[in-house]
Amino acid sequence: MNHTVSAPAKRPGRKPGTPKVPGSGGSRKGKPNKATVEFRTTITKLLEDNSENIAKWVGQVANGVPAVLDAEGKVIHPARPGDPAMALGKLAHLAEFAAPKLSRAEVVGDGGGALTIVVNKLA
Image (cartoon, rainbow, N blue to C red; front, side, top):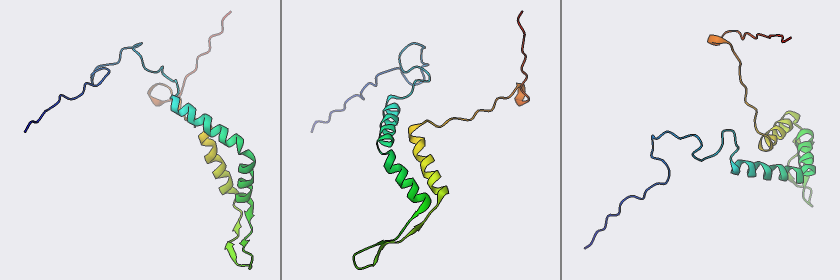
């Protein structure tokens, strides 16, 4: 019986704990991830191509829809009352996929106190 033990595969890149050297590769700070950009582009195109359907759908959520009946008059799908707040929420939720969320930042002075602004007039 032969048992072979292989050495673990070497991982490319720097060793864990080694600091990154500026200019040694990788993405620039602030550059969006390629997959994120492609996803947002795809979602934006999907929303643009279906803008009429989305407007109709949001209108149905806001205004409600009547009951759907079969040929015999039996209710297949019950009526739904309108809910404008829910329609706005759904539209806002869709918008998050096309536009990035804006972060909130608080600007404070030294020690978390009031911010002091000094304006110097140049001659």
